[in-house]
Length: 216
Image (cartoon, rainbow, N blue to C red; front, side, top):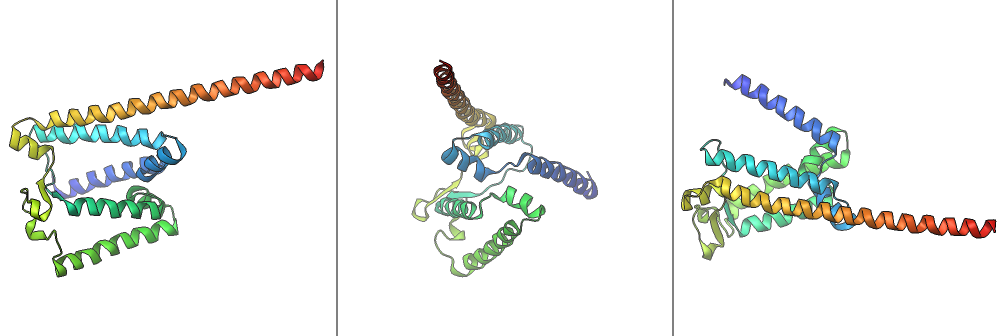
């Protein structure tokens, strides 16, 4: 595949993905926020389905030796970064994906959030290079380094290489866990629906009794 064809395929895929994101109003922040605060799970279910598909796809490619899995160290820096990113998503009111969508729609607040996402990444890269604060880049060798709070490479590819177990096995385990969460949400929605119908029937009975009393 030539570079031109690769660019065209990437453009087509990006356009379709962007259209689906815009029309579905999918947002990772909303998936967590709505489930916790409003007990609605539309985005949460979509996120779980996407995670299941991606898990099977990525680990399947790893098992057959295709693709280029990312290799990055997991450690204190990972957890600190995820925590700060979560705070940023809450303050922005959107995840990175929906921020791109909203910025494309002309939302000025989302545009500022997007701009300062890149500004923050750039400034952090300067601080990282200048200060070498722990865990420093030289400790990230892909190996476990507990004094530096580094756990080394940690993904399905790593487990496949070390244990000889196909990555798809770990992918299926994670998918089963995600599916259990999905089924739990379906059961919760069914219980909410049944409770809602129960309240509606009680309300209708009260209205009917009140109407009968008035007529009498």
